[in-house]
Image (tube, protein in one colour):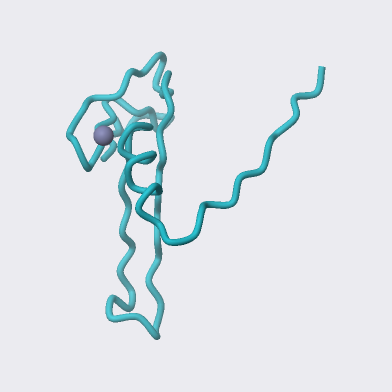
Length: 82
Ligand SMILES: [Zn+2]
């Protein structure tokens, strides 16, 4: 759940994990710890046609959530260019 200040530039003022309610650390409007931000636009064949749902999870809640999956999440390592 993001609280965004509407100014010239959208800036996150506060960011909370929707599952545990913990406030996530921000620096200059950007998260300074792991956060899983999800936004889903539900389509015609769903039971929520036309609705967009969004939520944020801290890394601990994300890890606990995906451990419940029957199949593991896909993981791809990003290599940084030096
Ligand atoms: Zn959490």
